Picture 1 (cartoon, rainbow, N blue to C red):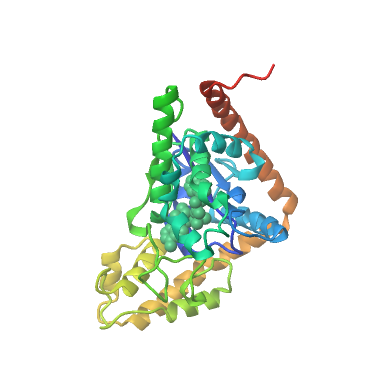
Picture 2 (tube, rainbow, N blue to C red):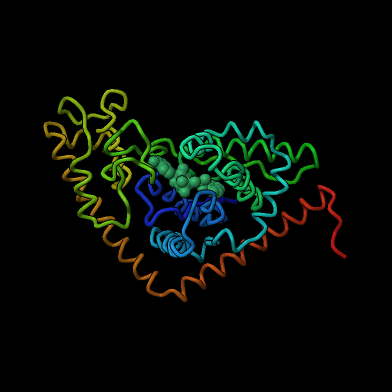
Length: 331
Ligand code: TYM
């Protein structure tokens, strides 16, 4: 069984939502599946970027993935642009995608409405098709992501089925692997919005590479709700529920156990303790990231080996696709 997933190198640091919603599952699935994980730099240029910053963030992303526990002995860890088949398959799939279908993608609509349709690039429009190419090239059965990627995954499934119907069985139809409890981590300052790099208030997002003391402070100043009882009630107490979700995921203690532990205590105790839990997790993580970044040659070697492994699979799928659509094989 194969797994593929990707993450964009569009910020200096991953955030807690990325980790709990997706990256933790990347690490877990290595035990049982053949895993392909990529830093999606082609996707990152769908919005304006600085070339030097993009290079730096791509390395930092790879270092963070290693520090989280992506193990190059188990997984092919690679940079998307090192495997040209992604862009090549994307073109073929674009020709199977309806214009209206692409226009219905909510992430595109959100981003394009923020930038204005004249400034939004065509790449932003075709972004989800490139994502489908990422997945289908590896014949992935499962794709670990957070809830916000569900619609893109649905498009990948539709494109796989459509291509198979039109040209004969070619692609595995992938299933999203979304773990319900942590599928959507919310902004600490606005628990009705997802935690996101484009959050309006910096206090709402915990960056894995920021000073851990700052993260603890953000947790302590998280917006909580009326009342003082620590109970899990996402409707009535979304702020507290979000903190309990994070706490439970980081400690592997069940929500009911945490509710019992905080009976008779208040929100302040919960936040203080969660801040400490976070510092204890993030401090050694940051040390690992630093050591991976210090040995740049080794990091680049890991990525080169990952790309080589990825290309073996990707080139086989692409050759099949090219044959199926009727391209004349080169002499
Ligand atoms: P990206 O880079 O925005 O986010 C990486 C992963 O983090 C998850 N995530 C969250 N999960 C829970 N709560 C949150 N607040 C939260 N914020 C982000 C995302 O769901 C994602 O799994 N389009 C993708 C990248 C991509 C991809 C792929 C993913 C490109 N090709 C192929 C899977 C397969 C994206 O922008 O993720």
